[in-house]
Image (cartoon, rainbow, N blue to C red; front, side):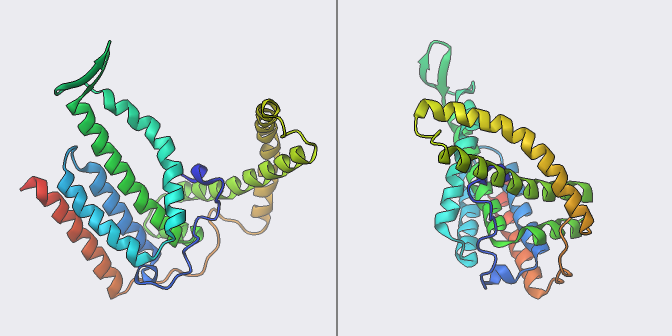
Length: 258
């Protein structure tokens, strides 16, 4: 997910706001989002009313957290471009009435239902995950995962990804600036060749740069995750937020179960 935001590496742009959502401890925010994502993902295909209930809950969260809509929409557009390629394959599933056919390629009612269902699931889950990363700083997010008993090695890998993506972006920016100063990016054909060579050089340069960054982090007391002050403990408000999330999840599931 982080790789989709190379142009906007500062993930938590709305983490300094003062709202009810921001007063929740990071563990509660993570639990609310994870519960909602699992509920959305495990809902069978074609359950539109269930997703309508979840969409209303997510809309309430968007208004409550006061995220920057322009940044949220830009990130959703970038992520949707990658997810859309995967979703396209669900359109040509077998089953149901054939609506369009060209040779062996055909679109059926079952394929349309699966495409619509998976699209709705993906969009709702992406909105939730983006709200979480926009409103929670990365160190607090990582420590919340540790507090929720996520394996420390997995958290350390995520912390390193975040750190090294920043290194990667810095290296790419300096190489692009050097190419521009030598007038190598003016011709479109030259651009493809230069960018291709830049990616090759980037791999070699970041390998050594990554080693130096890791040694510097170890010499400064790095122990796997970024240092942060003690996490605040949950309050009655956190309990209410978790209860409300569970209620919305149960109402959504009850719509098609009963």
